[in-house]
Structure formats: structure tokens, C-alpha cells
Length: 207
Image (cartoon, rainbow, N blue to C red; front, side):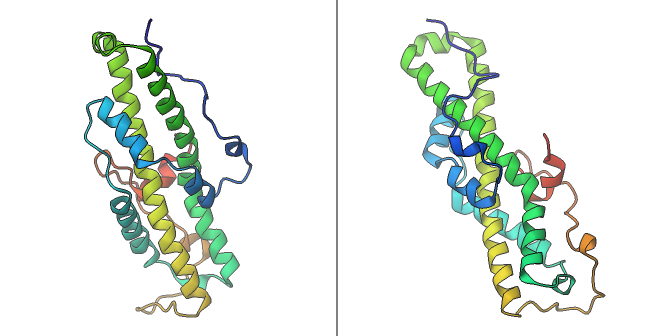
């Protein structure tokens, strides 16, 4: 039996809820991949196991914490306005993660179907399949990394909003009150090897 192409795979396991209009951080967390599934895809492609979720969350938290240290909380009139701006800042990456998680689930499902329908010898002899499998594993890993970093970053955001509500956000240095536009300026685009950087969220929009 011929091995089906992974490239351009159609939806096979897409969750109906993914068609919701509201694509929130909370929805992204509900949809996120399981590390075991990511590890399985990477192992089949001959790649090392994925980073742990705790490590990814720690990296995301550190980057968002550094970014928020540059914000002036006095630029926001209330908690609702602050949360709205924070969600808007996260949204390009969240939308990207939701879209790519759906695609990753499709690739994982198709790979499992291929494993059931073909022999090891046949898969080893099919160069095109091995190349596609390796490319799919890299995409799955990048999606896992992006989602994990968003989760860690959002935990920092939740804490930031709580401290704002409690009146505990005080700048350590005296700065003029920033305008709303200045308060939400993203970090410069940055890539850390193959790991998606949270600072590159805006640049990734639509890619």
C-alpha cells in the first residue's frame, strides 16, 4: 500500500469548537497537544524528545515578566481596560497556536493511520515519506513550544491583573505616564534557534 502524503493534509480530527469565533487563551489551553503525542511524532521522525511543559512555561513567563516590567500601569483606567490590552497583545500568537495545533493534530492522526497501514520496511524505503514525516515533526514541536510559552506567559498576566486590582503595581522608577499605544508596544522580533520567541508574536501574525 502506498504511503499517503503528509503535506497539505485535510482535517481529520479537528474539534468542532475550533470553529468558535472567540479564540481565547483559555480555548488554546483546552485544545493544546499532549506531550506524549508530540514525543511519539518526534521519535518516529528520529528527533529528540520535546522540551517539558514546565520548561516552556518558565521561558514564557520570564519573557512576559520582562516585557511587563516596561509597562506603566497608570496608563490604564481600570482592570477591564488592562485585561483588554493584554489579550490584544497575546491574540496574534494565540490565534497562531490554535490554528497550528489543529494542523498538528491532523498530522499526528495521519501518521498513526500510516503506521497501522504500512510496514516498517516500506516506510524506511520511502524517502519522500521520511522527509515529510521529519518536516511534520518539526512543525508539531514548534506548535508545542509556542503553546507552552503562551501558557507560562499568561500565568504571569493573570498575576499582573490581580496585582493591578489590589493596587500593588507600582513602578520602581519615576516615568511619565505612557499613552495606551506606548504601553502595548511589542518587543523587537527575536528568534531563539528553533524555539519560537514570544517577542516575535506580532511578526508571526498571519504566517
